[in-house]
Amino acid sequence: MHLKKTPVRNGRTYLSAVESRRDPKSGKTKKVTIQKFGYLDELEKEHSDPIAYFSEIVARMNQAKAEQKSALTVTLDSTHRVEGDERKNFGYVALSFIYHELEIQNFLNARQRALEVSYNLNSIMRLLVFSRLLAPGSKKKAYDEREWFFERSDFSLADLYRALSRFAGYGEALQLWMHERIVATYGRDTSVTYYDVTNYYFEIDEQDELRRKGVSKEHRPDPIVQMGLLTGQQRNPHGVPVVPGQHKRLHHALAHFEAYPQAVSNRESHRCFGQRAKYTKERLLFSKPSRRVRF
Image (cartoon, rainbow, N blue to C red; front, side, top):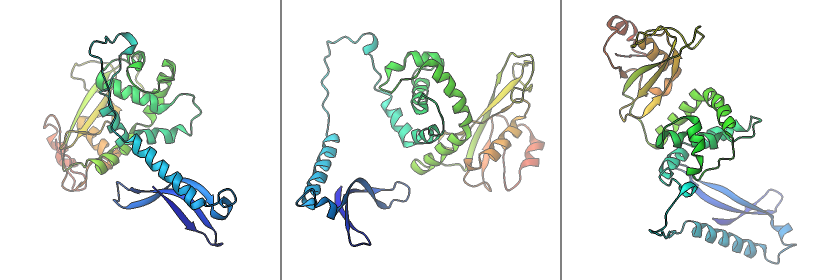
């Protein structure tokens, strides 16, 4: 960080603290303004030597930043017994790092600004994600154990349930957001993908637009919902679509590729494999060069 003296058209000079940062996508270095101080001629009315004064301010800012990055020594007492609410989870820090790398908080915060709600969507999402990965259970169980994490938890259980409908509406957009950042950060091999579908049945009397009667391994007559999972060569998920239960497995996969065109890098040579090589006639029918899917 350094003091930048920017000349303007009217002959005046503007002082600000700027820092050079590298763009992870383009790899180019750009200047980011950290703090604005004002015009030099106006600052001279308050300080005899504004450049020297604010250069010292910037030096202190650099020193404070360096101290924040310094090593931290933690002393633990092996005889101390941790009980009750004193227990905290430190291991989720690794998950939090990945969460921030995918910039999920930016996705949710941008949509939070358009909502008139008192709870924080990002705080609720973080709790649900970390709880699901470390101690799978119900939404209420995750809420009851929220104090295990060093996270903001100033929301009620009712707020958590209300946020679920918001998350459901963001599903496809969030998957695309994460896909783009995974490609940029880790890379993906989508020359060959693997696709499977599972069913969830509902004990209801009447069907609706989503819960429809379809083929079930348990031969249940109840309406079902199909959830698919598409993975690549690295076995990380590319998409998790949910469709009505009356669709066949192959149609489900084709609908997935139409809804998620980013799922494959080269549609001309792409191959997709399912759990069973069934639907031979349909496979030939749908094996077009533009979207070749093989089961």
